[in-house]
Every structure is written in C-alpha cells, then in structure tokens.
Image (cartoon, rainbow, N blue to C red; front, top):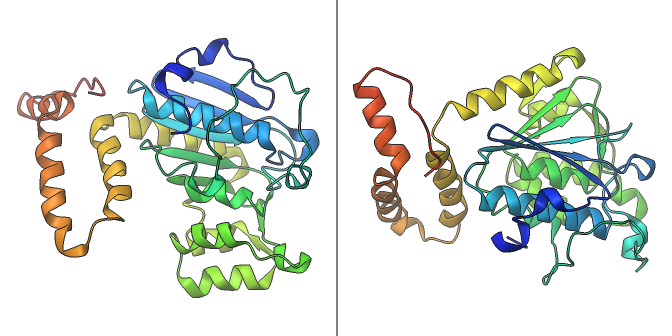
Length: 274
C-alpha cells in the first residue's frame, strides 16, 4: 500500500478534492468527483484514490469497496496536463504527498478486498485500469468503452497488461489495435464487465452484490485475494505446498472457527474479520 495504517487512520477528517467517500456497515463507497474534467486522473485524484484504497486494505472492518463516478463520463483516463508537468496546487486536498510513485495499473493489486465498479457512463483510456483492477464491474447497457490511444500515436501499454489478465490475448490486442469504441455487451463478452444490467437496476444490483459478499467470511476472501497475487511469483511446482500452508493459516483464524461452529450449530455465522 502507498500509505501506512497510521497515515490513513484519520481518513474521515481529511479533505478530499476529487473523491466522495461514504463508509457504512462493512463497505467503503468511493466516488470519482471531478466531473468538469471528465474525472480525468491527475496527481491529486490518484493520490486520493491511493489513500482511500490503502485505508480499505488496512482496516479489517472494511469488507468490500465500491467505485463509482459523478458526471457524464466515468473516467477519461489520465489527465494530459499532468503528463506535461502541470501541478494542481490549489485543489484544497489535505491528503499527504506520497513517498513513492503511484502506478495506476498496480493500485488495486494489494487491495485484498472485493472491489465493485459501477459504470453508467463512458470509460476511456486509462479508465480501463480502474475497471481491470476491480473484482467486479457492473455496467449498464448504454455505457461504452473506448481505447483511442493508437489514433494519437500512442500504445496503451498499461491497459494492455491489465486486459491480458482478464481476457484472451487476441481479444486484448484487437482492442488495443482497433482504437475504437466497444459496447457494454462487447465488454461483457470479453470479460471486462462482469454484470450487464438495465440502467434502473444498476444501484440495486450493486447493493445485492455487496450484501452477498458480506454474508461470507471477510477473512477467507481477504486471504484468498492475497494468495492470488502471491501465487504469481511462486513456481508452479511449489504452488500446492504454498496453498496448503495458506489453508492451515486460514483454519486458525477466528472467522474460520466461527464458520465451522455456525455450520455445526445450524446458524448464521457472526463474522469478525479476524
């Protein structure tokens, strides 16, 4: 994580310039709030996202994260003014400056919590990195997904890497080469979108998904998602040994013991997140 537990513990006393945060029950709802700039990702918005995601990861009472957006565009990708070195010095954000570079494509890698993107508007370029970092993407049929970098002499390197993790190589490369706009149906068929819904069903679908996730062990989910990341650096011949060790660790947790006892006693478990 970019920020430490100590840095993020006072998150609700911080001033966010371009994010809206709402915490309720065991969920943290993050909303991009830079509509005049089409929610383009500048250094302040990236910093605020990294801060919020760090907070969610560090606190076991947060079991699920949602990511939405205000305005007519979900996200237009990177703010080109930032690439040109222009600083946003008067945003009013109180989030401390990070001590390491924030790489958007890696931002969600160490968030070992389910993250649900709710997409009701078009997504462009680097905005794909937000969606690819989430475990679930709920989108309405009218939303569109555009990768136009090649039309401007640029290749979407980071987006390509993220897409290759969630769809076949030929499909990902076709998206990068085509440089066009894809429908929500196409994004669903390719695996970028996990739930395709009617406009009026977006909020309800996300709410049901959050509730469903929160009925299950947050500790099991957290360690499971952590293990997915860790396995990428473990040789295939050593993976089953590693997974057995991880299972033994999980069985010793309070949530695992509670889940087993609840099953024996034929009652709903009371998860602690530990």
